[in-house]
Amino acid sequence: MRPSYREPNPVTGGGVAIGAVVTFAWLLLFGLVERDVPGYAWWTLLAGALAWAAAAVLVRHGDRGVATGVAIVTAGGWSIAAAIVAVRWAQTGDWPLW
Image 1 (tube, helix red, strand yellow):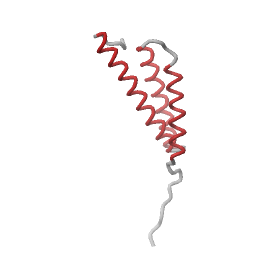
Image 2: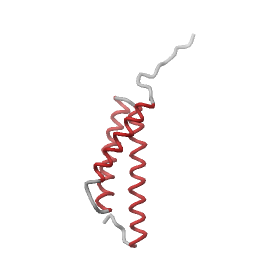
Image 3: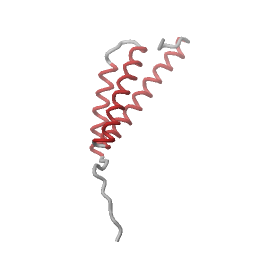
Image 4: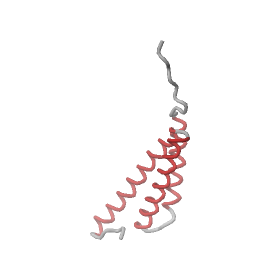
């Protein structure tokens, strides 16, 4: 007879959804701090870094489903910020983050 191993904290859809919603609100609040593109980009980068640090802690000591939702939405938020920076750069010809 072979041993069977159970996952102590299985990833569930509810956990992923909770992590996604909370991270969306987190990035939205940080994104609303500034009114210009460089400020938005820097605040989004900072908020995403903090969110990923929280996700790393959750992966090790907490719910990996929530950490998955955090990571997915953070990557999406960073992609949106990068697209906004790229569009501004293409429009003005000047790098907006310096």
